Length: 110
Image 1 (spheres, rainbow, N blue to C red):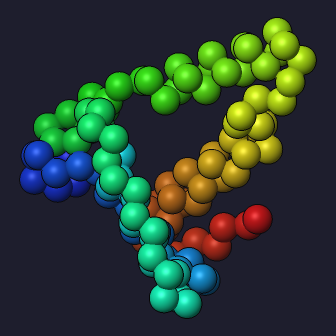
Image 2 (image 1 turned 90 degrees about the vertical axis):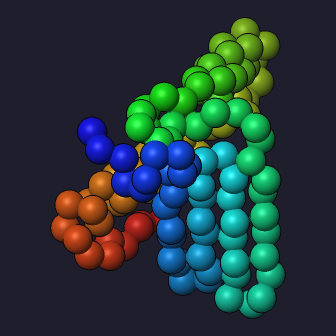
């Protein structure tokens, strides 16, 4: 697999949507809404997959979600990330892959 940017830059995705643009880069996020609002989430300092090995990223986030899911089952509460929310993320991933394969914008269904 070849990196999409010169080694050393974090992975970056630009999502242009009906109400604004979101730009996740590594563990940072920048969102610009059409109404002028902006949201910035600073990088958390953890390593992300970038540079020569884009798959060299920590699995802390995934482990935390799985741990919370197990605790939710044990205690009888809802998990912080529900199945419905996880499905939304995977639909986004599928749309990104389709857009890359088809080399054109792809509509994401709610």
